[in-house]
Length: 366
Image (tube, rainbow, N blue to C red; front, top):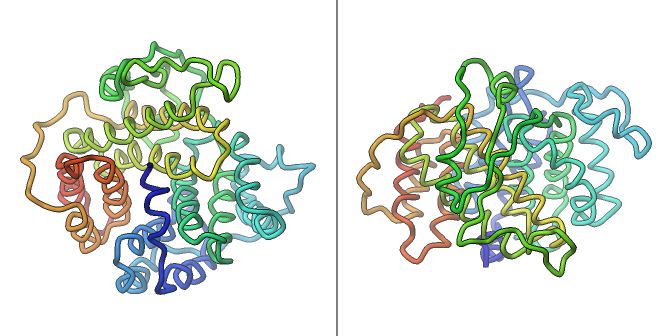
């Protein structure tokens, strides 16, 4: 069972998450015209791991990174959504549209309808929209019926994704490797790793297709001709998240903040899968790999560093250290690493080491 499903009962009994989301929903999903508002994602992770008492203090410390919701431009509707897709000027319009949708329809239906529409733009906003969606879905699954603030958070996440929607460039698809680790080894690094992520992604010319660990080859299944068996696809994704988390321990020095997303983006998809029809799983896994490998292609260093010596630290203690560190990227990466550890028989010491590496390399105030 995946961590999102197994931990669905670990809901917030304090009400802190809903309070925090209501407090944050007066803010927009970005600041300074591009940088992401990480607060809803970070507070969901903090509450999930027993740090609810620290949440409002954490928001107080983060408030200088919050900006008001931008003004509305023109309403998004069923007749004009295609022309509005990828238009950041309509951030507020998109959020308002999805707010109506999740109030008028079951949120799972809204998610299933929009998943294939949004998925080609998974790398939009440096992958933050899909990551925010993953946190929102996990909170809704933990809540059962879904409180109003949690439904609103899904609307904010999907609206952010729709407004920033942008596809990767057309690239050459290299053969799939037999493991996720080998897949990352095979990712061609762009020669010019300068500029912002949008400029870097535009320089990608080739990426390997999704790796198929343990000889899984994406054969036809009962879910449809030419589709990958959903359970095998999910197993592939678990291995991708594990490999990306482990790789952070040795390659994070290349870009400590940005390489976090190579693990947190595919893990967001893993969290979303249980809320989707199984027929949509394989496409989600392919997109997750594309996003993760693209982040590696544009930020990973050519050479890894020696694996740091594993310390005898329990996963939850590692998360507590990330919470004290306070940086939103360190918190979200620790949250993903604990998902990886939950799937391992030995609590995955390398995943825990990767968390400690994040707290070492990421500046608390960045």
